[in-house]
Amino acid sequence: MTVTKNQLTVTLGSSGVTAADVLAVARHNAHITISEEALKNVARVRAHIDSLAHSDTPAYGISTGFGALANRHIPTEQRTQLQKSLIRSHAAGMGPAVEREVVRALMFLRAKTLASGRTGVRPVVLQTMIDVLNAGITPVVREFGSLGCSGDLAPLSHCAMVLMGEGQAEGPDGVTYGGRGESPVAELLAAHGIQPVTLAEKEGLALINGTDGMLGMLFMALADIRELLTTADITAALSVEALLGTDQVFLPELHAALRPHPGQAASAENMLRVLSDSPIVASHKVGDSRVQDAYSLRCAPQVAGAVRDTVAHAEMVATRELAAAIDNPVVLEDGRVSSNGNFHGAPVAYVLDFLAIAVADLSSIAERRTDRMLDPARSHGLPAFLAGDPGVDSGLMIAQYTQAGLVSDNKRLAVPASVDSIPSSAMQEDHVSMGWHAARKLRRAVENLRRVLAIELVTSTRAIDIRTQLSDGELTPGPAGAAVLEVLRASVDGPGVDRFLSPELEAAYELLLTGEVKVAAESAVGLLN
Image 1: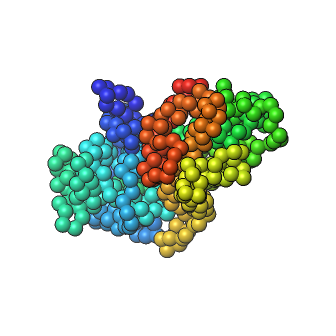
Image 2: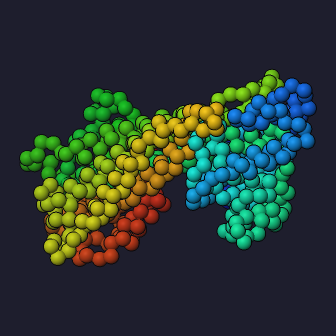
């Protein structure tokens, strides 16, 4: 990936792309080019496919039908119609349109495989897909349709329809084409100088047989969770500070040396740094009768650290999948066109489900700390619900309700999709991965986690401010907490009488989305990512 005059550029070659390339295209509209080497390789392999297409020997997907209809030989004069019929019939998704970034990741990852020279498409098919992406045209892909086996068939078919000048798409200006009463997609392509493609033998299958949708969503979820891991360490530490907890359980000699999970050691180190030089923490190091803090405080690094290690495992799987060239049939180096099962999404589906479990638990422990700060029986001197005048004011009581609702939703989303195989295609496809659905629910779970952490942030900072007020300014947070408070108070007011709370919670959410809270703490004490 390169940057030229503030324009990100990603080059597709035969050897693949990086996770950063996927994010650049999906989220930052990076311009895509195709290397000459890749185009030549694609053309060379296509010539081999053309020879097979004109052979008397049947070849799956080239001169035969598909799936359960693979035993039927298709005459040459019907093969163009075969490709059109494949894409049109498989573009059978329903429900709301998925997010633009998901579609862009889906298309870019399929283009990556097309560029590998393992699929047998003509260069014009690859180039057209890239032209559509570069033009900012987004096919309308529906929420339901993929079973995560034989590839993300329906989502990829909706994209392939647009390459054919059919289906539905949104232009870069947000205007949609292809729906009832709307201009056809062919007009949108023409406005950007793009000629629709007429698919030849093998090309329909090559456009739809891949795990690209679930993999794209995995990479974006990993990027988002990575960003939230440090944020979760920050909010947890601020809650420890607000609840007069001890920082001694985060000392390094208690972690890597005794229990060598790298994620746990990193989270403990972050929390120790956030609590460093805190007058509030120092105020109760002597004379405190408590022996141990509650698990939600004391075990925060163990939980957050386990999430870190789960992310590391998922990143390993995602990187391996990114290096794959998935199609069925696939063109091997020696020219053989071989049927295979590499389109099965199990490896990706499992880690998507695993991440949803980890995200649910991380949100759950954050909610427990919030609830503790609002309960005068457990908050060590804080007013009920951190209200200005408890009884007259309700403080953050219902903010915790919202947080509890989000956590409950995440627990439901943690139920694995990958164990719920449903046979399809007349029992030819009798075991499927449900990886697309695992990815869809993980996206929602990550958003829920960000909101849960936003509420913990609002709660812990209000509790710290109250500590400072009750001590006539003597008990103040450490440098990290002070830096976070300064950023937060620009858009979220401190303790006081009840007011319209929803906008403040959303403002805190936006600060987590932009990373400003993380940057503030990092600039004060330095943190591990």
